[in-house]
Image 1 (tube, rainbow, N blue to C red):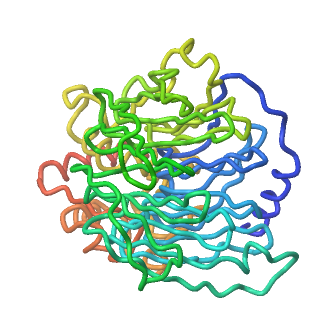
Image 2 (spheres, rainbow, N blue to C red):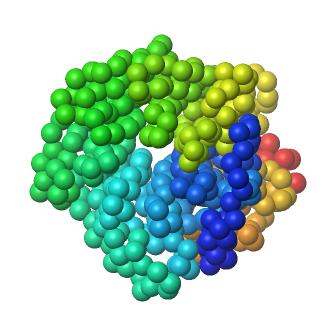
Image 3 (tube, one colour):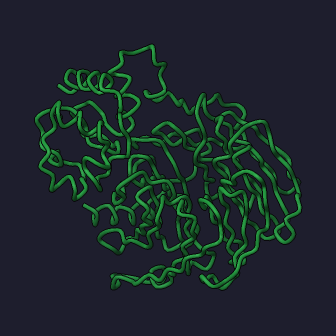
Length: 440
């Protein structure tokens, strides 16, 4: 299956459609869109809460399955090679000439961002563990035909005092990082653990996003701060802060000098960096955030993702003519008094990962249809963790109650299920009564 997916990956790259300047959607994911990247040839790579990476060409997707939790970051090399990072702490690399993904490196916390160096020789990754992993991939990027499995060498950069939220390479190869500690650091170009770093920016609030160019750095912060600063001195060139927070996504198209900024209130602000003017301020989502942005290779289209399971693409030139498209109407956001308690518990604790329908879905977890009496880890078509494959649990009223009473991390350690509990006995009983009816 994996070999077939990677061969299809090659086919996609060789059969791309001509770019169209129209509003389009890419549908097929089973969870919110957390990250986007576009190859030089126009293939869109998407990272999703459904644990998968999608590769899109001509409106169709090839699915890359290998992560054990939500995928939140993705990037393309010129090879082409896709690199993805997720909440399973792992960074995977996908190449058409390998049968399965390779683990590039692993953090001690969730992976927040990925950057491939301009010379394609190294990949830098940011982690919630507070570290930056810098991994040599030169052999992988240059290998042809059917190579032997490469050996990856990783150096760990330590300097931030909190989560590292973003990493970016400048055009000259210098590495920069942003952190929840409110700083931007510049790392020595030798890129090893003994290299020092200097604090270029101290913002005061956590910094989420970075774009680094030859002479300037643009960044977006938790408090809504959106600024461009001199790359050498850190002096502010432009302050583009609006009354919206936090800044969650940025994308840049160098050839057209366009900077896109997405925020937690669903807006995409477009900036002309030649004079630092705001050219568009577009509401992309009716509710919820813009989590991911990427430009088409020609800069004429902006792709965006948020709470929906859909990727949206708008023509930049007429962006303001469109109504908000990202709906953001997740079932777990419904008003509490609009449904019985058991359904409410399901919507808030289970629905983002599990469906109730008999068909196989693209959600992060298996369907719960017919779950009562089913042995854990046995539903055909779902890639379970080794823990569940070897489990002797039979799903019943008793075992589902225990699952949420103790929490998945205690009841079934090392499974893919997120750490959450339902502490109220009445809430667990209401959930189980709802599932008894809804899963038949």
